[in-house]
Image 1 (tube, one colour):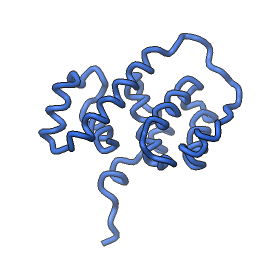
Image 2 (cartoon, rainbow, N blue to C red; image 1 turned 120 degrees about the horizontal axis):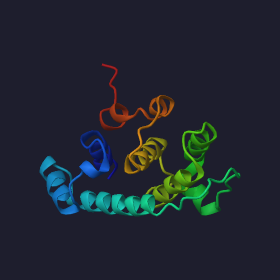
Image 3 (tube, rainbow, N blue to C red; image 1 turned 90 degrees about the vertical axis):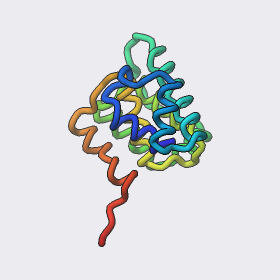
Image 4 (spheres, one colour; image 1 turned 180 degrees about the vertical axis):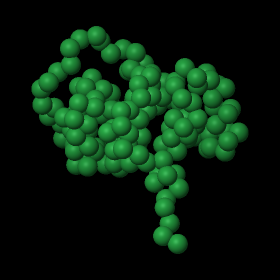
Length: 153
């Protein structure tokens, strides 16, 4: 699923440039992605879009987020630390943090690897039509590392 998310991020510069679900599924299948992964990715993106559009326009919380034991187990220390870093640096707000956490919990991994959390952050920003600023982009730089690992020889 994460390979599909990276592909979409690199292929479509914003979510409204993406075709509808049926056309997207056909395009992804034609590119060579597995049908099961396509369905999972499209469902994941649909829920992300619903979550993004349902954000109430209210001031963001400046309180400290306490993670439930299930969240802590699913996210892991690295992911929680990274999310905290993004929020404390002012790169995401509390509502975006909650979207990232919710979408991470919706994956089938436990704990969610840090590189996958970075993809979730990118997709959350992408779904909101926002470009990551330079600091965030440096932290999120991952396409070559995830899709094509650098080889020493």
